[in-house]
Every structure is written in C-alpha cells, then in structure tokens.
Image (cartoon, rainbow, N blue to C red; front, side, top):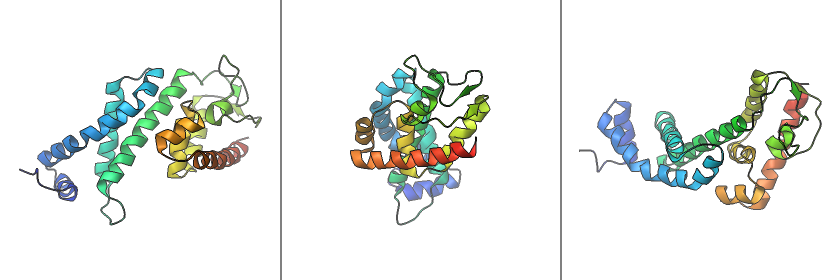
Length: 203
C-alpha cells in the first residue's frame, strides 16, 4: 500500500505509529545494513562478534536514525541513516575490543602494561606513548574517562577514535572512512590533545 511512498512520507506515517510504513523502511534499508556488516565482519570476528551481532547493531542504528531524524534540506534521510548505522557498528566493535583485552584489572595506571606485548592503555587508545601518572582504580573510572573523551570529539574524530581503539592502522582507517591518510593523521593529533587535556584534569 505504501510502496511508492518516499522516505519522508514513510517517516511521517511511522510517527503516526503505522507499522506497515515501519516495515517498509526497514526492508528498504536492510541491504545498506548488510553492506556495512560485510565491510566490518572480518574485524568483528577478531573480537568474537558474528554476522548477526553486527546486523542487529546495524538495525539499532537504523532505529536511532528513524527516531531522531529531523527533516531538513541539508541532510537526506538516506545519508543520516548511513551515518547512524555505521556509528552503531563501530561503537560495538570498539566495546568488544575493550572487553576482549580485559582492561579492567585491579588498580593500574594509564601507563601500565595491559597486553602481552607491553602496550599501555594510552597505546591502546591512540598508539601514543605518554606518562600522565594517573591511577585508574576501577571499571567505572575507566568508563568515565572514555565517556569524557568521547564527548569532546567531533563526529569525524569519533569515527576515527572508534576505529583506532579496535587496533586499526592509519591506512586502514583512511580506507574504511574513505578519507586521506593526512586527514586521519590530523584527526588523531587533535584527539591526542583532547585526551591529554582530559587525563590532566583527572590526575
């Protein structure tokens, strides 16, 4: 019945609790989610995530897009949905990476070794060797620091940050985000400055 409706008409109907319209827009964007999952599935498997795990996260991202999209002439819903889906998948990859490497040990400093290869927490975050002399007492404090970092980042910096904490190199990040190596490097330099500011504030 609503197959010939455009995204904006479907979103309006969804706002009126029309389930048929909701089903149509989910079906329409399912191929986009599948494409994103295929893009990140190899990375996901490194952290114990399967295809269905990433697909469900993609659906969560699409739901967020549907619920929060505001019609305006600058951003099409398709573009907005694409961003929301990718960010949600990147977010779960970053979380899985943190969980896999068991950061939450009993009381350690951010310059303490957390991996078998001697990597530090800051190496883990940004591949950067600095000694902030900060003690992290528990998982809540680590989560607080991550949240404080995340709040200070731009949208592009968040995407770069999420990919960096999964362990990817600059070239891999640039390829995945379809950006130049220089733009990724510049973003990471800005992130480092923001991270240092936050860490200094938590000494």
